[in-house]
Amino acid sequence: MTRIRKWTLGTAAVSLFILLVSWFFLVSPKKSEAADVKSQTEAQISSNQQLRTRLDILVAQSAKLPDQQARLAAIRQHLPETAAEAQLIRSLSAAAAATNVNLKSVKPAPAAPVTSAAGASGQLTNSGLMVMNVDTEVFGSYFDLERYLNKLEGMQRSFLVTGFTLVVPDESKGSASGITLTIAGKVYFSPNLTTAPAAPISSAAPSTASN
Amino acid sequence: MSTQTALRATVTPHVNLLPGEIREEAQFRSMRAFMALAVIFSALVGGALFVQASGEVTSAQEQLDTAKTENAALQAKVNTLADVPKVYAQVAAADAQLTTAMGAEVRYSYLLNDLSLSMNRGVWLSSLNVAQAATTTTAAGTPVVSQTAPQAGIALITVAGRAKTYEDVAAWLEFLTADKTYYTNPYVTSADRTDKIGNTPIVKFASTVALNDSALSHRYDSKAAN
Image (cartoon, rainbow over the protein chains, first blue to last red):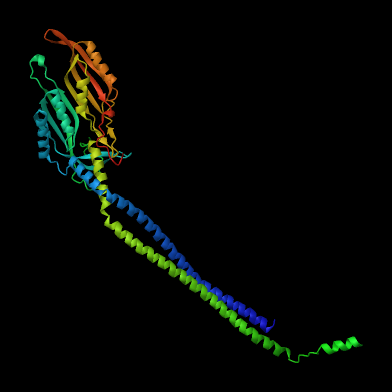
């Protein structure tokens, strides 16, 4: 082998060595870093897209916020923050006066938490609601009593009639005219309307509040 | 003779007197420059590739920085609207509570009105009792009647009344049977002619009928469920 050939081969080897070293120690790490940064960029762009979508939804929801706040205020009328018994008695009395019936008695029971079965497990959950049974007795004509019930159903504060007994006096036996209506009802209130409900509670908890 | 003379005149004899080593040395010197150039070229190629890769990194980093800046701006806008989902969640929770509370509502005033308009003339009520079965209400607004309910339906209506004749009692039962929208399983549990109004004998009767879930008002069903 001549000297020129040796040097030629040597030069080729050195050139190849330089190329390999620069590839593996300089170019390849940079390529890898670039790929890594590109990957981060794609993830960031994807995240931005999601954020943009979320922002669009929020902006759209924001436009309807007054409606939602009005709805919340309306529900608050149905479910006040406290038992508000005084206001309830006034409402029942006003309904009786407006329908020309005689409100003979109002018997509110102590408030209790409302529980309901959640999902397939049937586990009782606290709905965040409180219920108060209210029995009332009124006296009047059939149609006035019907109007009184209608007033109760239309009260701003929700009044749930769960049963009633209507007793017509026996006029043939000299009883007084007029009908007695005993109403079993429930009113609700929600002390924590602004917090999410449905925290599981023990199934042994009192179930007085099932409606 | 003439041809050979011509050939000799055109071909000049050439004799290289340099030794082989010197000739090879000369060739080696000229080749060495090319070799050096080859090595430099390799280094330049490596360097160019490095510069190009570095450029890619710089470009990608700039894009990443831009995306991050955009993200920060978007996040800031989202943060300004952070209360919006809270209000929606409050409304949904309140809606669910209202449904839980009032999902089992029946407009009994309508029932009394229908009863007064539809009852046959020969029958009048002595007492009317409505007992709604204990229910729980799912968030979707479907009342679940307790398994202990004594009848099919959501409420049991017990009516005690008086009629002129047994025919009127039968007509009362037919009235309840005909209204399949609200009433189900009507029964007369007793009827006897032991009472009188004045001198006219009358039939006292008792009946029961269940109120089915069509009577639910659905006024408070969750808007979200709908």
